[in-house]
Amino acid sequence: MNRTRRPLIAGNWKMNGLSAASTSLAAELAARATDAARSGSLRADVLLCPPATLLAEVGRLVAGSPIATGGQDCHAEASGAFTGDVSAEMLADIGCRYVIVGHSERRSLHKESDAIVLAKASAALRAGLAAIVCVGETAAERDAGQALAVVERQLRGSAPSTSAAVVVAYEPVWAIGTGRTASPADIGEVHAHLRQVLKDHLGPKGNDVRILYGGSVKAANAGAILSTADVDGALVGGASLKADDFWGIVTAV
Ligand code: PEP
Image (cartoon, rainbow, N blue to C red):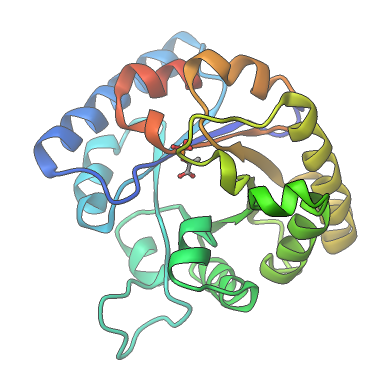
C-alpha cells in the first residue's frame, strides 16, 4: 500500500440483488461509512457497483455518506439505437462517479476485445467518470508463464493513454469467484509490472493511478493482500454482498 494513493475498496454486486435486501445492505454500509468518517477511522474510498436496476435507489441511499456508486459496464456511445445498453453519460446523470470496464466476465462471456474496452473506458472519461479497467490472466496463461505479458497487453490495449482518471484492477481470472486467491508474492509481482507499464503509458501520472487486486478477497485475507506493495485497494465480488463481509475488508485497510 502506498499512502500517497488513497485506497479504494469497490464492491461489484454483479447480477445480484432485488430491491428489498439491496436497499438494506446499502443503507447499512452508508451508516457504517458515515460513522467511520466522523470518527476519523475511514482509511479508504468506498464504492458500490450494483446492477443497473438498483443504481438510482442505491445512489439515493448512500447520498450524503462517503460511499460512491458506479456502473458495472457502459456502452461506448453516449446515446442511440443500442437496445439494452447503458451509456457512461446515463451513469453520470444518476450520480455515478465510476464505471467498471473490461471485467473478465464481459471479456469472456460478451467477447469484449481490448479495443472495445478502450472505447468504453474513453467514454467513461468523456462523461466525467473514473474508469476501472480490469485486466487478468487465465489459469492456462499463468501456467504457461504468460501472466505478465497478458496483463501488459490488456493494459496497453484497453487503458486510455491521455488521462490518469483511470483505476486498474488486476483480477486473475482463475481467482474470481473460486475461493482461490493469488499469493501476495504473485500479486506484488504483477502490480509492480503494471506500475511500470502505467508510467510508460501515462508518464509520471502513472504513479497516481490506483491498482486494485480482485479475486476472492475476503475479510480474512484482505490484510495480507492490502499490505502488499503497489496494491491500492480491492475489487470485491462475492464478499461485497454482505455488510459484515464487505465492511471487514474496508476496515482491513
Ligand atoms: C469480481 O467479480 O470482480 C470478483 C473479484 O469476484 P470475487 O471477489 O467473488 O472473486
